[in-house]
Image 1: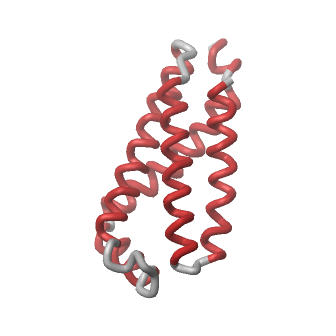
Image 2 (image 1 turned 90 degrees about the vertical axis):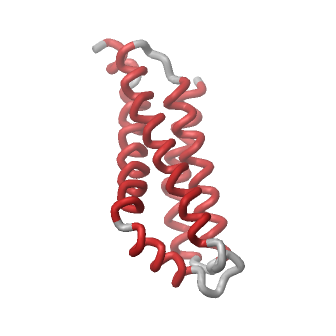
Length: 132
């Protein structure tokens, strides 16, 4: 219980990001066709239009890995105080958000790109906290 209390900020941040990334990844798996169709339409006028399935797989893998590392990282922090897997998960989440930002900017979806900034700030704050 002491480790949880000492690391509550990190744990709450990790819970937020874990829910965000695992839910997104699970949604892509359970509704692959719907997601692929939406993304193809979203990128129809961008240089990425012919690469949507491959890019969707890359983002899916990154989201699942980030969420899994952060979920295990929460457990590690609570039990042993070890933060390395949680840090790896937050780093992967930040990198995936940069990839998503690139896509949004290329699709000229500036409002969508702007919403990613909130998640990115949270992820970078997590990286900062877990590095200290």
